[in-house]
Image 1 (tube, helix red, strand yellow):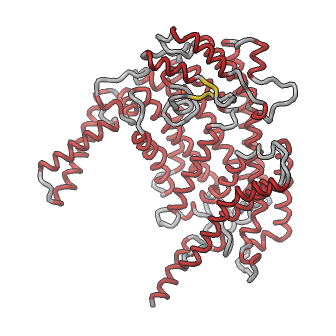
Image 2 (cartoon, rainbow, N blue to C red):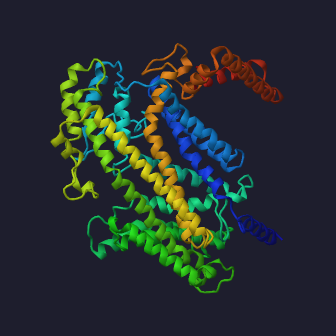
Length: 602
């Protein structure tokens, strides 16, 4: 009897994730586009809290990220929040500070800060190069542009002018390790983990789960985006020539973790007789096996960066030709034989397509890197000029000006050609350009930088729009299919991923500008704090902004009602449990203290 019940439950769970048709591309775009907006807002809140008080603790940062970046995504994936309304609201919140900056006409003059002698010395010592490369190392690591205490590569926030922070953000666009790419990969992994954990629950809408044979869904995007993100950072894998045995050895070492996970998952599922949807990848195959194959192919097949576009086109065309010759019908069929090939036809039949997707990820990474080098070099020169002038120095730092100048010159003094695979013969790096043109061109250089940056970003947007048109054209011939990883699916993943990357790229540049506008709007410049001890919490900046927008009288009236309602909820919860009045008042006082720590009483 128990065996029959167990088999019934297993079959019911398998059917729960089977025969799904997905959702519209527009809804998936709205869902995915919320991620960069939420991460941008979390960075803004972190930056505001850092500027208003002492350095953020790990707990403060964790509270902000969970509340602003993770919880809303969970609600979106549960269907509680409408993705269309959410993206409109979030876009408004992201754009509003930038509009506020234009309205305020933020001065382009450097903003200085009062610091004690120890901080001045620390700031001067933080402008250093690392390992002979052109990376600026901070002795007190902070976030790239917001100063929120998370990124290990940049300078002390309180000592930087707005102009210098913007230049650092722009300079980062052309580095080998790009912040917006790292944020894309991290945000993608976060979204993927939420969806994987949620898919077995009824609260997760079925239209977001993986489609059966064709269609688009949230989890279909997650599968392809993981492969794309891997290619995005591996475009320079074959910049140097290596022998085949070395490439095999490197491929096996890189694929080993995925192979272990593949075998471990396959064996454990069979051992406990856990439900599995074999229509996704096959009986023995799973996504870890696909990743292992892609890693092996990426190491074995030597595709140089300059050949990536051609390789992507050829592999995609070859895969689609195979699918059109009858392979897609074979992969999509519910019938399967007894051989290993037949039992795992879905996973095996899609491997070539996922490799093509990986190559396209590398192609996009290569194009974004190479085309951003001119922008990076000008920003590099402008940073050197600012540091050599002392514009990045804090007030009271005159005694350290000479050492600051010297170290500022060291920042742009060494650029290694092996880190510049896109450099053409005769082309000048930022260091070489400065040696022939001086330390910089002042405001004219800044104008040239913004013009070049806008042209570069516009060209990337044109490429993205072209890919959307290519997706429409490919769909007129074939339906999007994750199971076979056909050409429309590849184009869809590349297009949507590039859209998110461009959003994160724009957010990275706008972040310091938006942060400065909000700091001026709240009247909190530098380390200035209000008398209220609740102003140092992570949510204090939002409270202050809301109070300034709606007026102190109306805001205090609303907050008083909210506190009263919260206290009543505590009383209603405690009374049925037999809690006496003194204990209830103690709980209410504790809630007030927690509210102060979080900044809700600012």
